[in-house]
Length: 139
Image 1 (cartoon, helix red, strand yellow):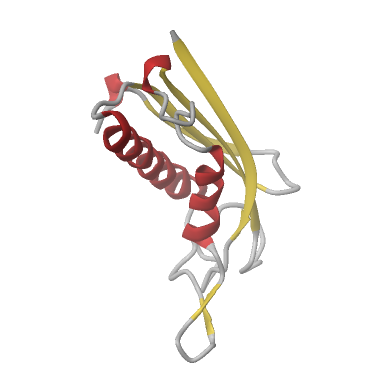
Image 2 (cartoon, helix red, strand yellow):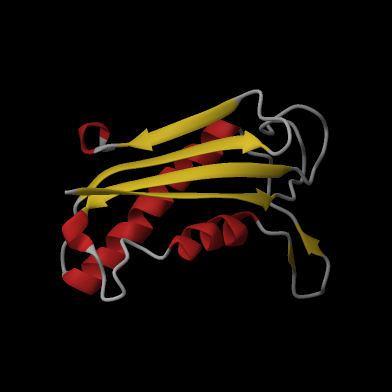
């Protein structure tokens, strides 16, 4: 049997420039929305009964794009703005790896059918971008 987990949320980025930024405008601190779907074999549940804790998916987006401070306390920006395509592709790769690592550590094996991430600009989702991994398109 196949299980499909869905996690939706939002995250803020702090870009150094807005040249290639997903969305319109010059805002260097835009908010993005995400939808993440993980399709997996129902036999890969961990000891808690999860494919992976859905809070870990949200933590991924919060940690990857958070506004940080350097050792001197000054703002530390993401280097250059990313397109929705770049954010979605990186997210699919990273989340796939995160789920596989969790399953291999827990069970010694993993069976994923699909990882799908949709990225949009929060409050202006007239356009979104979806990246999807399936075994047929493994890269």
